[in-house]
Image (tube, rainbow, N blue to C red; front, side):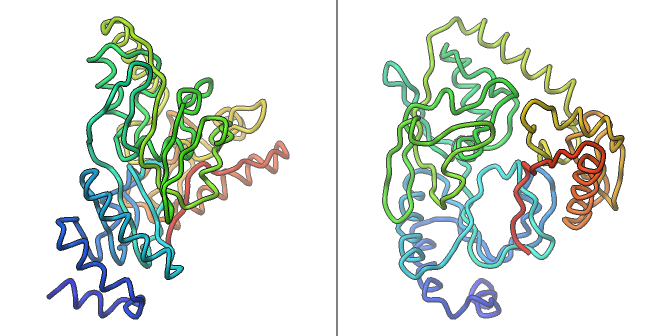
Amino acid sequence: MRNRMYLKSMKLYDYPWKYNLDYLIGRGVKVSFGQVMKNYTSFKIGGPADVVVTPRNNLELKYTLDFLSELVNFGINYHIIGGASNLLIADEGIRGLVVRLCYISPIIFDGEYIWVSGAEPLSRIISYCSEQGFGGLEYLSGIPGTVGGSIIMNAGTNSEAIGQSVRHVHTWYSGEKEYLNKDLDFSYRHSTLQKTNEIVTRVALKVKREDSLKIIKKVREFLLKRRKGQPLTLPSAGSVFKNPSNYSAGQLLEEVGVKGLRVGGAQVSYTHSNFIINIDEASSYDVLALIRLMKNSVQEKTDIILEPEIIYLGG
């Protein structure tokens, strides 16, 4: 009853898709109303979403995609989030529907690639490869989020990114599509999927047989490097800005003196100038104001315009 009362208070109650929520609920898919999004994000910032749909396995994902087909037919937008490790969500929250994709599912090795769900946490991929003796993905160690989100953003280090390991990507948007690596135009923190609303459902990643102990050693080295150079003990959304061509955003920000700069509960990290940390119940407005100050400081002193890597949703 409470769920239906909440629906009646929603601005979107008149949309036909409200009836189809019963389709999901009846098949065991988790459907939540008015969930506070800061509980789902690494930044620990964000207000309530009208509806959050959380499939917990591949079968529930199939039901969810059936449901989303109806939304597409009605021209209704929705938001997809994974591990929410690079998101800043508005204090006002998100109107409409959010689909949260982050669950564990079977990983299949076909002799050349490992096939994984787009909803799979990257951390589990690294653990699986370490245990099974599959090398080549160690550079992803310590990167939060899911496989799907990582492919959309082409996540990685300054020298390596997941796009180099991708061979096939299956997506969904009103129907299934399959892409080869060359179709996705991978470049620094970019893929063509950023311009679509497609859901990454399955991915083939290139791996190679190696000794597990050697893989584990490489993983530990990457993790140690991240712990030394990034503020991992406080909430953040990772790097604030992309590295401009031939420059390091972190170095530019340090040179213009923004380290330690604070707005409300948000502060530029003393550990890494390209990280904003949530030190005291920061609001989305605190973070946005701090991002503007950081960007303006670099532009005024260097004429370089930094491009945000953090994605802002809601409001």
